Image 1 (cartoon, rainbow, N blue to C red):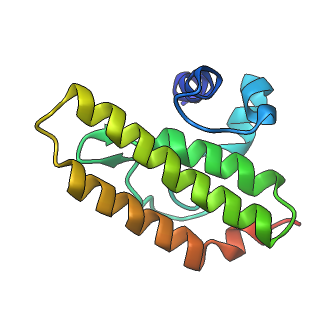
Image 2 (cartoon, rainbow, N blue to C red; image 1 turned 60 degrees about the vertical axis):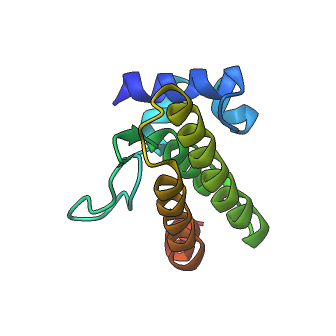
Length: 130
């Protein structure tokens, strides 16, 4: 997991995905404490895949976890949710540019479903511990 988190951080620093400066400057331990990938951290089962048709979109989820941890109001939640969606779309577009045979339109629809789910049902996760 830590190699994946460090990869996410490198993608953010390079500007491939969007992330707050605090994420870009975080230590590996801080990243491991906060980020768990796609799906709820406290779920008994991991029902939310970190991949969409083979493309790893967990990087978007790591940044989303970070923004949920440090967000303080509804506007921060909305920004975190939109950033997750936009990062997934960036990742999908980048991957499909290299692998032309992937179903880009379907992947983008799935990313929109992920966004709708966190937008509608992510409130308890965002407000937990605040």
